[in-house]
Image 1 (cartoon, helix red, strand yellow):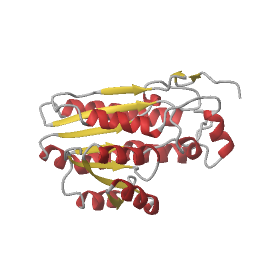
Image 2 (tube, helix red, strand yellow):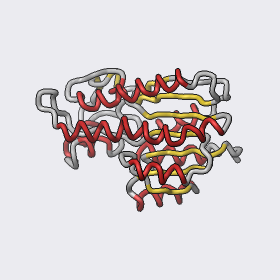
Image 3 (cartoon, rainbow, N blue to C red):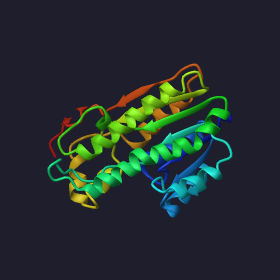
Length: 247
């Protein structure tokens, strides 16, 4: 049985990468606290991993404050809440979509990190793992709003690493490429056909693959900081270069 590694907090934990990460960290020996907006799904995931579900909307100051107040100890924070909306060009940008992406990805990560940072430092061996994206490393057509948000998250994560030098907190950014979750369904606002087309003929990463990477990073010796990790499927070499098999 895995040894007790302390308390891990996972945001956006009701589905996809967040849910898989909660399960993987529980298997690795963490007591897991799960946060997300969809309370029913969150409760199901918490039951699966023996974790504790607390409602959380990372875009709401009061929600984040209430969430953090219920987390007595934090040894690991996984900032997973995020997502993309639309594929508009800059010329046709939907400002509401841009604002939403900035609120969830950038300010959401900031709010939760800021709220839990004192507890991470106090743990004596804390970690912050932020789930970014290949969109944080490589701008691509149709991705302007998401690119901008994830580049901001990457910059914030790197600055946090610099600011915490000498403190007992490690900081990591994991940037996945194509992962088969509900990411594309959300991006295309419920258009299942467009979402399915993203993965047609491709063997993408699974949420469990990213979760395995989070657990690996989290369980390195405390002297080891994995600063950045880029994860791509074998069928993907960059944001928009993908091998597709005949259907």
